[in-house]
Image 1: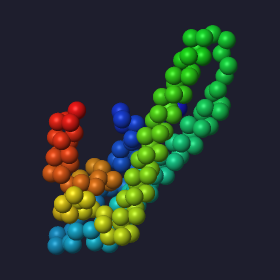
Image 2: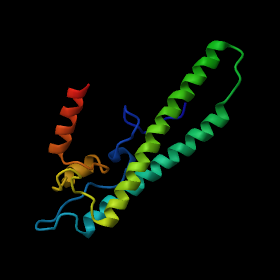
Image 3: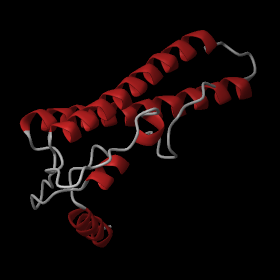
Image 4: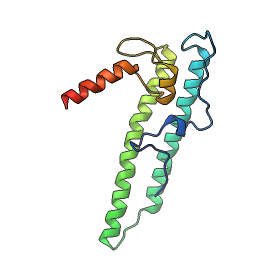
Length: 151
C-alpha cells in the first residue's frame, strides 16, 4: 500500500505537508494579517493543497496498478479493505482541499485570520497549527462543549 504523510485522522498536518516552509516569525510592531503574513499563509496553503493533490494522483495510480483479481477470497477481501481505507482517506482530504480553497479565498477578501463567530484575531500560532481554522480558540472551545452536550 502507498505510504501517506497523513495524520491519524487522514487530513495531513501543515507542518508535514508544507515541509520546507518555516513558521512565520512576526516582526515587532507588525500589523496582524499584513501582506507578508498573508503571503506566508497563501504559500503554506498552496503547498499543502499541492501535496494533497499529489497524494490523490498516487492513490489512483496505486489502485490501477495493484488491482488484481485474487482467487483467494481472503486476499481479495484484504485488498478491498485497503482500497476502502484509502478512498475514505482521500474523501477526507477532498473535504480538506475545499477548506483550503475557502481559506485562500478568505486571504483574497481580507477575512483570513479572523474568527467567523466573534471577529477577533485567530492568531498566528493557531493558524500555523491549523491554517484552515475559522474560529478563535475560545469560540472553538465553546463549539466543542456544545457538541459534547448535544451528543
